[in-house]
Image (cartoon, rainbow, N blue to C red; front, side, top):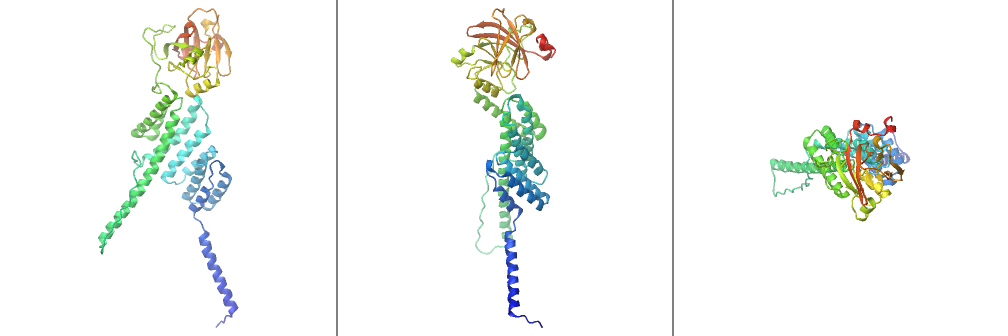
Length: 434
């Protein structure tokens, strides 16, 4: 029999107490992955987010949590921090989105990742306009459409459903086992109904965001409703979903048209056709891209607040509300994506359009005087009308214009859109070899 003295007993008691305390404290300080990711999320501070610290913490978590679903949560958090901190690093955001999408994700998180992806592409191309917008817009819309496709599998209603309220079941006195099971079943059904309503509300919100992003992008000029319809048809593979999306796109375009002060017209509308009595100088019958119009002199039109810049594609006059040689007029016309020529005693070309002397007029050429925001092309002082010239628009579309009459308050012209083969016959000799 072993007899322990008092000191040994006390020592073992303290040791046991220390071990117990250590176990309790250790249990309390052990954190779940969700708790650690929540701490990472708290580092988000918009444009002041410490990205280095976020990445350091998440890289440590990636080493400790190696299951696919765990890594998916970590990469989702990295993408979320980038996406909700101003997308200051769009390339890094896209990198994390792609990694997260290769791993298991909750349905609403998966759709949100596609939103971050499209938004990052848009931010990376901020400020791009005109024809340069076409490629990045098409690139950005692909993840948006893929995100919309994800929402289709859940048969979502058009509007967000109300969240059901729990019903309290009261019964006095004893209950049979069957009655208890019935109450429990109804309670479970209510929990499931509430969960489903919350899920649908989240997914509908994501669907609305995606639809809004697509509509916003495709209400910017150059309009391309046919392009977005084709892409949506291929990716969504759901006729009703395509029509729903296109109704939002068309509405956004109409609102943009009204905002810009244009008359509402279909985005892909052809220019209005002239009457049968109008023929071009080449003898061709009127058709698409053919017309006759009076262009008021710019300074007079400005005073009278009239439109005075001709957009050859639509055959309409536009009012940039500023002098044609001003930065304000240039910026507005570029934003509109319209406006080729004006008249101010000379032909004025805008939006980087060009007026060329055609071969027939080579003995009396235009004299170009470049300005900062436009070019002034002076017609020879003594010239027989009609005077022919070739206009090449910013979209590299060529028009033959014929100046029919020059008056104190403007000019009257005819114009015809040329095919590439037709244009070759009108180019100056020095341009034909280029």
